[in-house]
Every structure is written in C-alpha cells, then in structure tokens.
Length: 305
Image: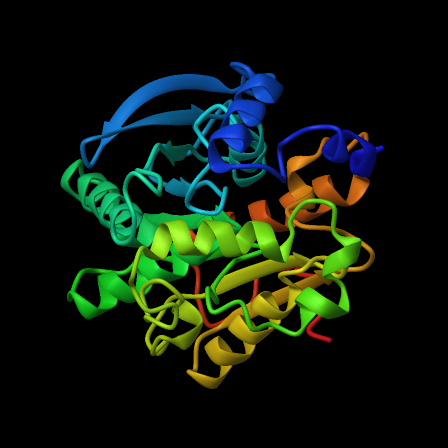
C-alpha cells in the first residue's frame, strides 16, 4: 500500500518544485494528534510550532528538525510525527521552519538550527532540559548542530535523537546498492539531487554538511533509529560506530524489514512506528529528567547488530 501510494505521487521523484507541490497537496494543513495543543512560535528569526501534550512538563523542550533532503519538508509535513513524539516524551516539541535549498544552501539550515537553540537558551530553557531530534536530513542536521555548538563553546543539550539520519552527502554508502532498491521512500538519484542543491559548491565531505566525517567527541547521548530495508541504513550504523568510537553514549535500533522514516506512518498501518516512537519518548524523558546520563534508560530495547 505504501509503495503504491508513493509511486503514484511526486513525493519521492521529480524536480524539487514538484516534490514540494506534491508534499503540500498530500499533507495540506494537517492537524496535530488528538490532545496536542498547537502554539505558533518564532525562533532564530524563523517560524516554528510548539506542540504541547496534556500535562506536559514545562521545564523540558525538544527542538525538532524535519527531514526532506534540506530541500523539502515543512511544519505541516512533520506536525503529526512531532506531535506523537511530544505525547511519548511528555514534554513540548518545537518544530522549526528552517530555510531550504536550493534557494538557501548550506549553511543556512545549520545557521537557523543554531539560532533556534540559542533562542531557547535566551528564553530561559536550561541546556540540560533541551534535546534536539530530527529525521533524515533533519537527523544529519541534528548531529551537525551538536558539533557546531561544541566547537563554538556553547552548552550542549542533554541528548539527541536521529531517525534514519542522512549524515554522508558523499553518497558512498554501500546500502544504496545493497538495499536501496527495496526502499520506496528514497532513492540515490533523489538524494544526489538534494545533495547538489544543498551543497552548492561546499565539499560533500565537509564536517558540518556530512557530520559522519566530523570529530564527534564530547557530544551528548544519541539515540539512532533506522529501518533495515532503507537506503540510509549504512549512514545510521556508521554514525553509531563513529559516535561509539568517539566515546559518546549511543543506542542504535535497526528495525527489521522497515523503510526510511517509517515512524511517519500511523501505527495502524505500521505498528512498529508506535513502538519506535515510544522508545524515543522513553529515551527523551530519561535524559531530560536529570538522571545519571551514564546509565541507559530503563526498558531500552535496542539492536546493535
């Protein structure tokens, strides 16, 4: 069903303009999940939305960076996913309408993410009560933001979550050939287009464009969730390996037979989506609670194979 729907749309094919148009037509103005209060906000000079679950903790915030290859994606497209994460974590999630390529190539998205984080701090949020999360390109942007914050001497957030992260814009991962043809969500040719548009002359191996190649030492704990049948599975596993080698606490879950950012689908269609989001919520609530960050969250179930 998912494959048929995607193949009949321009959501994963066509020009950037066609993909944006198809995404806008598909999602419209999606309401947040039931029980979520939606509040427009401004962070770092960009629009955003604050999604607040019932009885939310007000001392914690998740900054969410949407996917879309740095060229597509919006507040509308990721409202449902961000709202479900807010429900699972029990705290507000703030989504950011960062600038997109090709109109605004690297480092525009990174600059917007950094400005948003600094605005959260300026507004009184404690760094140990902030987490950064994102999917696909937003997952790569999450890691790049952590690296840039560390290098700039800024206080780091408590934790980070990367769903199917795109962290290697050199496009050299073996999984493109090995399992890529079985993933209906993304294609190598599509990501090649996005990479060229985003990089606009920046070296693909640049640490802040492809954070897989960055010095990852000193970063906060990271949760990585990825599908076994997706083109970016090697990005996720190599990221986890490099984080671990750098001494960073990392939890990696590889979900059997699942595709790119499967968490975006309703649990009624993909039951594992709800299971993954529940794991994300547990990870976030643990690390935003001020508990000993050297210990894994109780009940964490991850597969590092």
